[in-house]
Length: 378
Image (cartoon, rainbow, N blue to C red):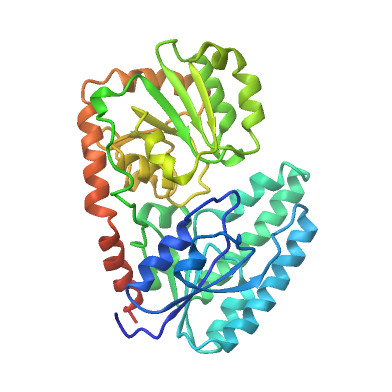
């Protein structure tokens, strides 16, 4: 273990996250390099990370369902974090996803600590999409713009700025911080759990989506695509969220006919089995995620992704080599392209390259090596 003075990892559980999450993975990686303490809020009592790492909760309340409540708790959480950071001995503070926490970032710099900022994805866009469902569009855009401004201040103040991949850094406009930018902070995949259990040649003409059924995932377009696929293609939806009712209403006839399967939420241990059902995973995300976990885990299971070329995706999903990039998110266009992909004679070769890509570049050991380089670079 290196002598890097310890790290405080500042994070918050993702909405709808169940089981081991990205923060837990990141804490596991850092723990191989130096001591780590996780500063978090509203952590579920049964969260696995409690058993594996030192936890300090700065709040037991969620963000709230209303924007004003969310804003007040956002401010209070920052003040609580400043008090905690001032009492900690760790030399580094890593803000993971909490990229608009201006006051704690400023506090860390004033205390002479190393401050690292790692976005999960485009947080202002994610918030705007969610707020537009409950607020007038102009208000949602102004509020999201405010969050974006706070992020830019944090990037400017930070000692180091980290992205998962170079493409993610480009999309988030992080190139202006080139002198302190690290573009190798990609996550790892548990390649023993996520493995090829069903040989690709034995899988049927089954495609699907694995993840949260929410506004960030273009679920209505997925539903339209599922509706237009021929009867010899089965579409599987694995996950839960606000759009599940929409799916079940829109696709009631297809569900009854057995050509659409809305599985709903499954335990984390069952995700590899679901991914091994698929010949193709469809991921038409907005650019709100840095690098969708479902894509990496699917590739580890030998399941290519047909995904929008957003954020860090093109660095992993190389069109026609390790997957396919989506040029049109319209449901009819998705359905047409899916049929063409399923008919490709080299799809089995692409499946093999998916698995090779993950085992070579996204192993736990590789992630530790990359993060050691980041944390020991001063």
